[in-house]
Amino acid sequence: MKLMYQKGLITVLSGNASARCGEGFLITPSGVPKNELSQLSFVSLRDLSWSGPKPSSEYRMHALIYMRTSSKAVVHAHNPKAVLAAKLGIPLNPEEYVETKYAIKKIAYVPPLPAGSEELAKGVAEAAEEADVIVLKGHGAVATGEDPYEALNKLEALEYLAELSILERCAR
Image 1 (cartoon, one colour):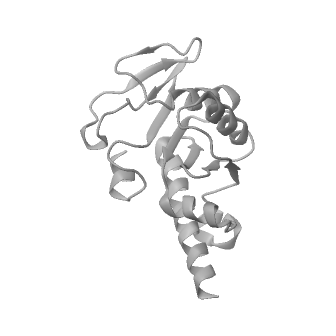
Image 2: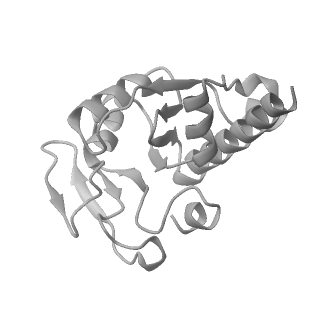
């Protein structure tokens, strides 16, 4: 979370990350500044109950991704350039650049849906069945991986791809 904040992918109170842990997952808590994280929440995949601090409002999205995929980590940021590229209708093709080709398998898009909603959770989880990076139009992006660092790397690669794609369009 601190890396995402330092890289400008989230604000101090936004974004979330989780890692599968036994019959549930550990997730960042709600409302805690990312530079002050000292505890994580544990959410059960059986009944979505939690222990520890109140989990991120996006805990349902993480839970449904774990229930529908074999992902071991989920990271959600608010990639400004990727959000802008989606808003401008600029296609993002990870195959175009070596730096993104090996990081991202497939990008999917989810239409604008309310943050923290069950509709958003379902839409992202469904997209995660096919793609490892999901752009949430007007909101941000979600990446899955074997660990949080792999998922974060995908979000960084997405932001790099979006920046190059926007610059390319401006150069025309």
